[in-house]
Every structure is written in C-alpha cells, then in structure tokens.
Amino acid sequence: LYEDVDIPEPPTFDDDYSNRAHAAREARMRVADDLNELDLKQPVPEGLNAAEEKSWKYQRYIKDYLRCVASIDDNVGRVLDYLEEEGGAVEDTIVIYTSDQGFFLGDHGWYDKRFMYEESLRMPFIIRYPREIEAGSVCEEMMLNVDFAPTWLDCAGIDIPHHMQGRSCRPLLNGDTPGDWQQGIYYRYWMHLSHHNVAAHYGVRTHRYKLIYYYGDACGQPNAIDERRDPEWELFDLQEDPCELNSVYGEPAYSDVASD
Image 1: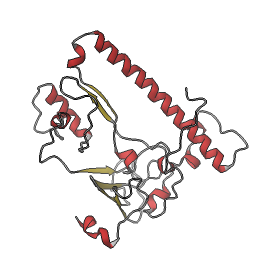
Image 2 (image 1 turned 45 degrees about the vertical axis):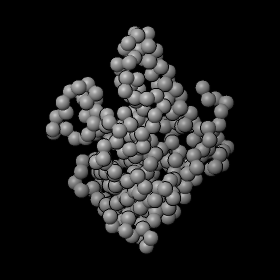
Image 3 (image 1 turned 180 degrees about the vertical axis):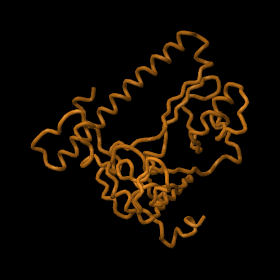
C-alpha cells in the first residue's frame, strides 16, 4: 500500500522555528535529525544528500502511519458491517473514532506530540449515532476528553456523578449549543525536557487565539528533568496565522488579547 505514491509534505515541513520561543528550536523531534533506524525500521539508504534524506525519512514514516490508519479503517468497517447485519443494532449503537491527542506528521518538521500546537493539541472525534446525529454534520464547538465520560453516561441515560470532571456534549451532537458552553480550553505539558527535550508549558486556546507559557521548570513533577530554562511566551492569532509560524506576543496590537 502506497509503494508507488509520494505523500505530499505538509506546508510547515521546513519550519525554521524563527519568530517564536526558543522551545520549538530546541526540541529534538525533527524528522530530519531525530528519526532513527529504530523508528524507521530500516537503515537510511546511502548516498543521499541532507534534503533527500529528510524526504526519504518522511515518506517512510508517513506511509507506515497511513498503512496503520488504513488497517484501522478496514476493521472499523467490519464493525459497522456487523451492526448493519444485526438490523436494529445499527440505530442504537454509538460508534466513536477518537484518540488521546493529535500527532505531528511532519508538521513543523516534527514527529511525536507534546507541544500545544494544533496538530498535537487537537483530537480526532468522529461519532456515528443514526438515532440522534445527522450524517455528515460538523460541530465547531470546543470539547475536551474529560467531556467523553459524561457524554456516554448521558447517552446511556445514567446520572453523571457530581465529582466527575467534564460536561456532556450531547446537546452539541444534536446541533444545540448551550449558551454557557466553554469558549476556551486549557492545556498543560509537564514532563519538562524528559522526552525530546520539550520544555514544560501550559496555555489557553480560544476560537481565535492561543496563548502559551513555557515556564521552564520541573516543578517537582515525576518524569521531569530538574533543569531551569528561561520562561517564554507565545501568542498566536489562529485566524491570521493558522500554521502557527509567527508569535505575536509582545506586539502592541495584541496587548489586550494577551492581558485578557
């Protein structure tokens, strides 16, 4: 599968990490430099220049990923076929296609995850429930994975415990957004420098903006390296800069956004 196909490289594949915090430049998860023979499951061919080697690594990496996705798709199809064969079961069964986070697939020249940039922050969330959800509908509201359990309990007619974090997103699935639905989400990566030399950070994302604070400290957390880094900020206007290549933190035009 995909043997005779060249998968297009993402638009940020050659990101030079300028105009942002040092954290992106210092991370060690680059396709070009950090993907190794163990990751790729075979040695890099000899005789390639740097650009050719980077492209070869990407093709090897992304094709393995897409083959895995194709296998999952095939087996999800088997589940759906079974439900169809069972008659009424398909109307009463909720099928969800999701994960715990996103992943960099050459975006920003990276593999892996960890950063609060869109490709890592956002999760796939595809749900099929013919009884309640119109096929092909799309919801642009924000939800978190802590909203999953309350949603499933709600759909099953079970009371949501008061101690449970999150909120049922069932109204969103029906196209009815509550007036007090969340307009921003919080993120934190705390394993300071422990994996791929990624600095610990937290941040907030709204529909238009994303503010990230690299606090540069292990804060006594397990699996974090106790090595101080200078704190840094990033602010992205996702409407003007959806690829997150240019931090506008500190620019006068965005001072009110950052302070809010």
